[in-house]
Picture 1: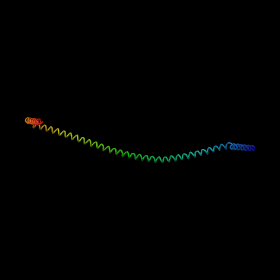
Picture 2: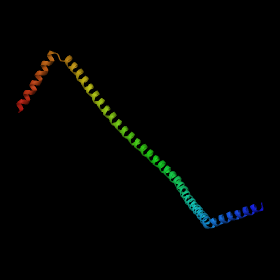
Picture 3: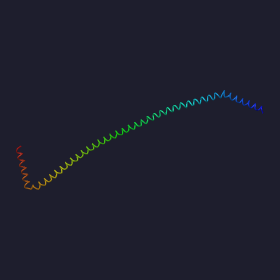
Picture 4: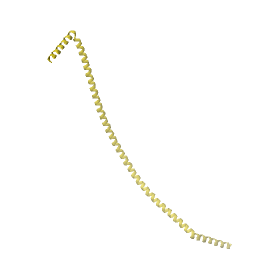
Length: 161
């Protein structure tokens, strides 16, 4: 049994020696490359983190400016709406004045037309009444006298020429 134990220990030492040899020859470079790759990945991750933080800061800055721009746009829009409302109110006032003037002109024209129509009606009625009175007062004797007076007046004017 002692022999077996010695062989087991020698085998174990050989196995450990081979593993140490392989580790030094190939394992170290593998682990060094692997650790370098891990370091490079960590460095790349750190740079990406810094870049994303810079982008986040830029986005937050833009967001702050965006909110300011939105407030400025809102204020400008409110001012434009107020100006447009004032312009529309003025235009409506001007249009109302034009309509009032047009109505005044139409009322004046209608009043003048009504006055003219009334005058025409009064004149026609007066002529009609005068004609009726003349016919009532002119009998056959007065007509002859009027015609002879007219003819005498006409003869006297003809003789002067």
